Image (cartoon, rainbow, N blue to C red; front, side, top):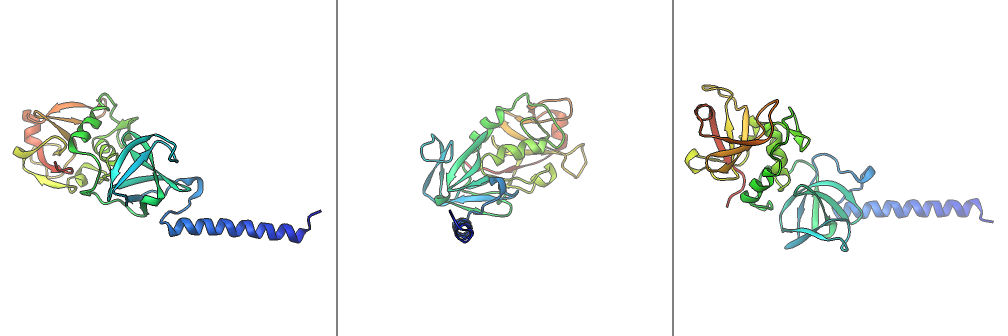
Length: 240
C-alpha cells in the first residue's frame, strides 16, 4: 500500500521535472505554448552554416531543403527539440539546436532570406487560377497584396499587409530597370496619389497578380495604356 505522503512526494517530483523542462526550453530560446502553436508574430533565425529542413520533427525524416546561417523563418509551432516553420508551399522542421526563436514581427527584408527572385516568380506561378478574395492571404483566395504577402512569406520575408504599405518594403527601382521578382504598384486612376494595387513582375512586360472580385490570379501586361497611366513604381525585395 502506498501512503498519501509518498504519492504527494512523487507528484511534487513530477511538477519539478515539468518546471525544469519548461525552463530548459526558455534557456534555449524556445518557449512552450498550449497546443504547441506559436503566438502570432514569432520568427526564428538560423545559426548553423547550413541547416537541413526536415519533413517531420526528427532526424529520421526526409530533407526538404537547406537554409544558410542567418536565414529568417516564420515559426508556426514549437515542439520539444523542433520548431515547425513555413517552407515553400508547406511546412518544414528545424532543430532548436540551430535556430534562435524570437517574438515580434520578422524584419521586412533580410539579405539572408532564402530563395532567389527567380524562385519567387516560379512559386507565384503555382497559384495561377486561384480566385480573388477580398482580404484573402491563402490559396483559398487572395486579394492583390495578400497574394504578395503569401508569396514572400514562404521565402522568409514578411511584407507589410496592404498594397499602399508594401510600397515601403524593399528598395525603389526605376521603371526601365524592373526585373522579374520585383513588386509593381498602381494607382486606382491616373492622377491619384494612393496606391491601390500590386503585382509581381515576371518579365517580358507582364506581371502576375490577383486582379479584382470575380477574377483569378493571372498574367497581365503592365504596358497597356491603362496600366501605364496608373503606374506607381516598383520595389525590389530580392537582389540577384
